[in-house]
Length: 129
Image (cartoon, rainbow, N blue to C red; front, side, top):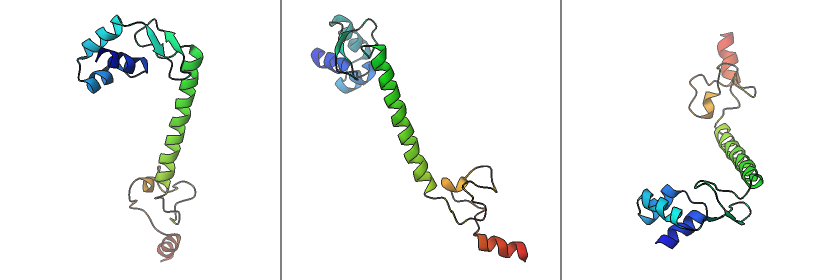
């Protein structure tokens, strides 16, 4: 159990997650890590490094920065997927839609049914008559 907890920690798993997975107390996991050799694997390059703080995760600032940039790119991709998923519900034939909603301050039809939706023809008919 001790070796398994140490290997999970060495691979970068947080202490609370190790405790949950192995059904240990968090204090026990901390004690296991403190009593073990201070070697960890960098999640970016895979190199072993000696850590000087219990929460240090990367072998160098370069690996830390590289991981931060990769995470930022992944976050942007995820937001883009969510945005394209949201805009698939937009009624582009609405009288007020011109890349954005001209009638309201937000594009409500992207995530809920818009109560102001009218086609351009309906709007022109109501405006005339």
